[in-house]
Image (tube, rainbow, N blue to C red; front, side, top):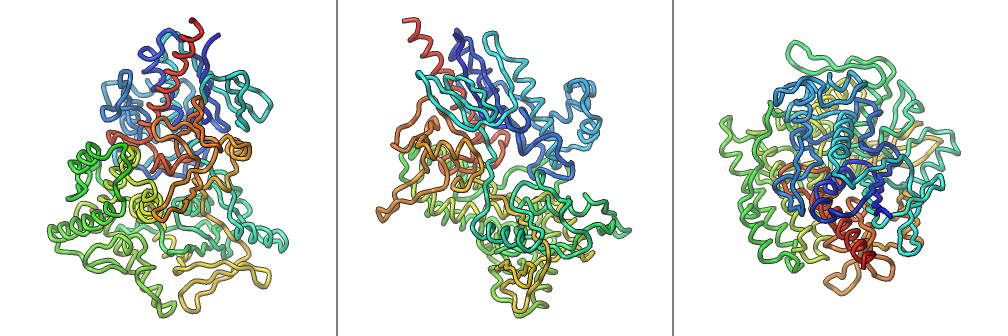
Length: 619
């Protein structure tokens, strides 16, 4: 009987595991006949987030030169490394711009013409459409399948996994259509798991249904019905994260409008007349800080004085696996580092130190930079708020256009250096578990997202043009949504700021909180006691429970309600995000990336398990 591994999820994380199974099989399980089933509910190879049929208005916010699914020299592996191209390198390959290859040589027959058209526009520092990135992931999966050694076969299958059982020592993966796949090892690599909204979201949805209002619930923009949003009328939008920019694009250029440059270079929006008037806000009032424009190649990462590369090596040597470093001390050192980096950049700017942005002082402050409107303090009235936004927009455009001179943007890039470095240390178990939750997850991570996971710069410039055209209004901090007089009402902390509409778009996406997940497999595992939430002991002796799955810290084995790790069930990515920290972000090349390290650990564990099973059967 052949051994069997099931990968639940068919996106980039599963591809990375598949690639490592191919590379490690001849080393760890050379005599094992192995079938690998790859099951995805949407599209094997691309997965849900990167499905290739989504609207090409939707962009990724990671630079093309950074995106990969292949291990590299920074990832410890049992077998050969087997590197592969980044997204930018692959785009050059398929257009004949690298290695002397001819255009289209790396693509299967019948590939849509738009793929090559977009590939010709790709540069290392550009941002691809998500559909194009999905094509890259599908190509990577096809390459992995082609390069599989004798004795290793892949079986892709589209379907939704709804349950996981065990019978006679084998795992039974149950699909929604009733099919069951038997496996020796199951790797849960779903990646992106969304969830239902909170009680307030449910209240607003119920009111909308009763009153005949339009309510678009939280969820991925690519999966929503946007035809229900009325044209030419005010529409409240709640949430200004990454999904917000997708919503804006689909409801503006997605409805026939277009952007153009005036003679002075200013971007303007030419409306189609079918756009709504978007009135958008959130708790902190402003969108995530936009990524920067670079002419071509990406600059070197910004180094940190205290939390340097040598500091990381020293910490790993002294603390790996000990879980004894207080993350609060690390965060304090990072705050000092960011202030020093910012001060040095301001002093070095040949155009002279730029004045600090709204809500900041001359010395860089992590909290104020992440949430400048909140840091600003009370606003006197609507005019005060609008003047603040005008100043903020002008300063932000300068930041993204001069990223290697602007001190603020250099500090934002230093935050990106820090979060990658800290994520590796979390994976190496150097921090006290409670401080990972209370300091890194609750304090540092939201600020890092705001500063280093923002939209592509072109999206921010477009938002500015839409605001100038009167099609987008940004509300003040402290957004609250109520239902009064048969309409939605938005209020903020700005005195007198009140807006009403008959339509509400909730642009938030609930990721990582499995207490409200809509994934049937995770729900069934929690309900049946096959899984539990990760919890840590706080400094006061109390228990801090998270909303992600509990797994072992070495091989990421799923832990059940009784505290027992399951030797044949591995969990990767966001579902175990409080142990595999920074898991929602895709793999970044040449950074010992946590996704690639996790893929190697999962593949090696699966291969060692099936090899051990075979030895036991023979004896």
